[in-house]
Image (cartoon, rainbow, N blue to C red; front, side):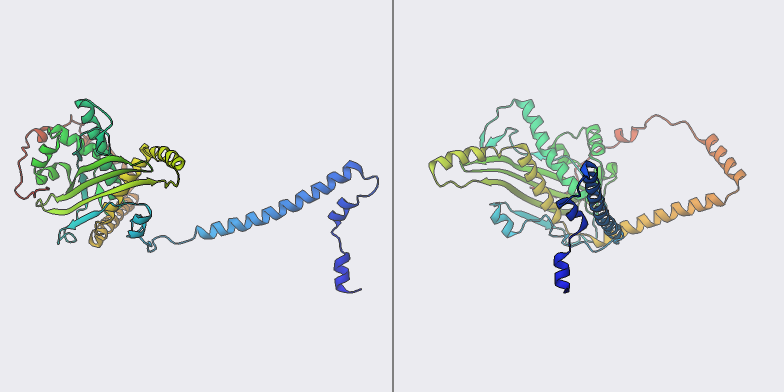
Length: 360
């Protein structure tokens, strides 16, 4: 008998038992066959799972701190993206020639201003008719949405961003409650109060919708500028807008009616939020990275960690009696926490800075 004939005549026992079960085996034999099959499949799955766990364990050994790929271009629209998405928006960025030498480590983003009417407009026509108070509230809402978006992207960079709650509290305390007062305030004095190396200002230039039947779009545009609190120098000036466009081509009158209704549905809050996020992201992406500042941040963090570790080692080497005595002395000499001292706010007078450049 040849090997080929032996292979042709071979039948696995499980399959043979299923095809021709023995007489009188009954239900018990069927349960045994099914159980054997289940155990075989379980062993097969466990083998695959073990292999997957080994692969996952090996992947967890991948090293950190590698070179990040496409860090300068990820999320940044190119010409092809703008053509595909029918986005005619543009961005303009101007940086100070000495920005790299004086890149700010701590940045405060002050409240943005909305230059619009405070009403929602479609094709430049107001579709909401709000009173003065409602217009003020919505103008504040629209501008702060973009302010928070810009802050979020700045925080991903080499900057330390001061919490906006702290910024707003100081401004409110000093009575700086509109853009006119904010412009007249010296960035040098304001930087001292906030503990910031630079201030980021912003204005909302466009925040509106467009509708042309089978085409609908949101347009969001802002202008931002960064002033140094060291000498009032303008470190950066940016201006840009982005469109969130929905196009539904139609080849017949019926298609036109249906698609016109569908594009009207694109006037949703989530589509507006995408346009806000996109214009903020692309403006921040165009601020050049300061390698010098990154090195300073890393060196400062390492120095702090070394100091903490050294202090812990010194504390571990002290005798137990000395530790108890030191702790008792510290507790005895600790004064009661005084009430908050706000006298330094009341004694500070703001004045216009001659170093501050006009932003318009």
